[in-house]
Image (cartoon, rainbow, N blue to C red):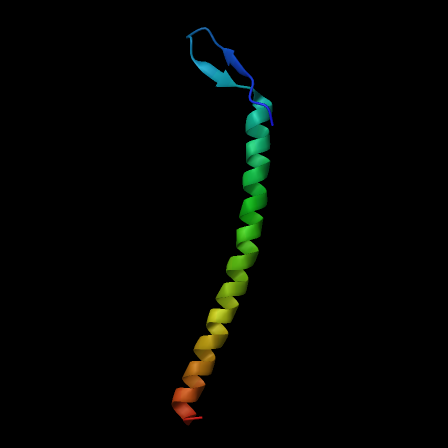
Length: 60
């Protein structure tokens, strides 16, 4: 990924549109990755809570 900076009229350096497009795609991929892991961990937390409540109720 190359960051090519161009100087605009105000003298501020900006990056090309392609840079932001690639950053958006990378952020989208990371969001999907973390969404899957958070769903899996939430399921495991629910299962563990159910198991603990069962053991507390029935003394198993």
